Image (cartoon, rainbow, N blue to C red; front, side, top):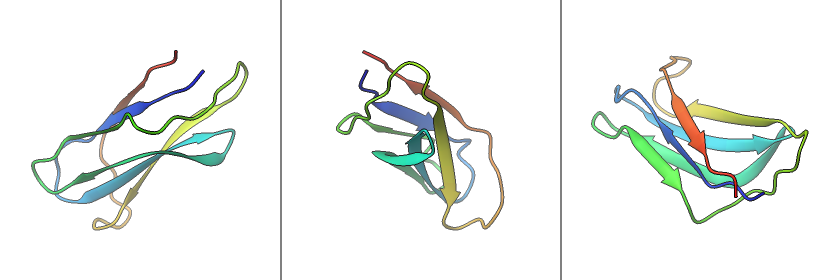
Length: 79
């Protein structure tokens, strides 16, 4: 299946870049949340091939808050 993705952060100060990984390899499915008021992002233009048994991972990298963590929810549409 191909998988577009969306992610949301808590709206805390900072810039976060999200990347979907399949079996440990980065895909082109990415999005960024920037600033205090931004809380969601999505990438409906890129897709990643996923087959049964593969692992999915969402990595978030902060460009402004060092190692601080924020709660994140994400969804993926298979189809």
